[in-house]
Image (cartoon, rainbow, N blue to C red; front, side):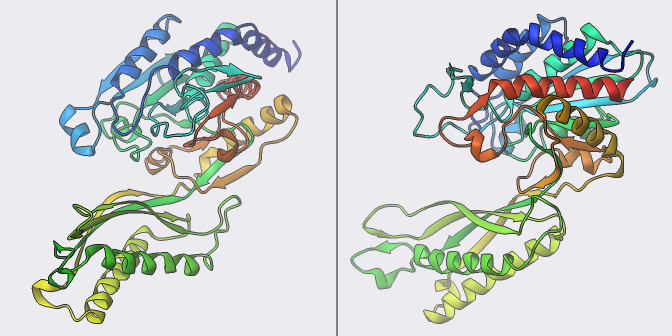
Amino acid sequence: MSQTTPYAALDAWIDQHFDEEVRFLQALVQVPTDTPPGNNAPHAERTAELLQEFGMQAEKHAVPTEDVQAYGMQSITNLIVRRPYGPAGSGRTIALNAHGDVVPPGEGWSRDPYGAEIDAGKLYGRASAVSKSDFASFTYAVRALEAVARPAKGAVELHFTYDEEFGGELGPGWLLKNHLTKPDLMIAAGFSYEVVTAHNGCLQMEVTVHGKMAHAAVPHTGVDALQASVALMNALYAENAKYKQITSAVPGISHPYLNIGRIEGGTNTNVVPGKVLLKLDRRMIPEENPVAVEASIRAVIAQAAADFNRLHGLEGEDAVRMDIKRILLARAMTPLAGNQPLVDAIQRHGEAVFGEKPPAVGTPLYTDVRLYAEQGIPGVIYGAGPRSVLESHAKRADERLELEDLRRATKVIARSLHDLLT
């Protein structure tokens, strides 16, 4: 038997079942998973139904409602599909993780965000590229492996989770914390043209600026919280000029960045705003210390409040107050020594299938893959997504996936699983 025979057989099975794989993905895209509001249990139920048709039994792990609601979501049911190929402990267990939750569609779509329409070789729809596409690629890679070259040892687990957009603590984090899984290696949903081995960290904070509400006809009787917020925003944005001087040694990652993504406040047009809420996102390169980053931002906020009060002669009960609440601290993912077999297999088969070797790089995104790494589980990010986030329109209107990328990524994953398990 030639060395390439198992790979050719895997490729052939995937080609023969590719139309079926596309229909599977369409069915997943057609069930909304907008987060917020984060009512994602129905999608998990639908996914489990579809998997059952293939003889794959999905364990349903529902996160307690009180925990989900306290987190700001409505429902989460995480799925684990366990596929053992020999006696327990006889080989490596490889987890394949993709998340079903996704940001709401937003405006500007030329197609139904949940129509899963196919046009010119592309499938359109929210989460078609990130990352319901890898529900399909991972599922069909495992099906191909079992149909053509079922290993005699080891195991594969499919982890389909629903909390990546909020940080993953109630997705993979919850499964790991509750000792429901502990794989030896893992591959997470990603992009077909690169193997991601590191990613940024992310600190998200909520700042509430307290002033004093007053009638707009007598503004001197109040303290404008929005004006104070402008001073705060200018101070925070000024930090970005400093961040550009801090560069990462990880290919694919440049420098830190701070973004103010949400502002809300005020009561009416004719009222001096008494309270304004800001939500900010600080991306941290792998070399940064999250504790030091948070302390630095808190110091900038405190200084902005002090400067505003001094400039406007405010003190005591009239002084502007800025309360800070941490929403999320997602640590950076750094490569673990044991991830090299994953990198080698995916690069080897990526080059064979795509005609070009996918580079091993970092990404400025943050993902819930870090939660596996924090448990000492080596992993990489690779999947059916496109060449870049920009190309996929992820988190923008008309998100789309090149179906040929789906086909080829499924082959790469199936081939890599074959090598890793045999």
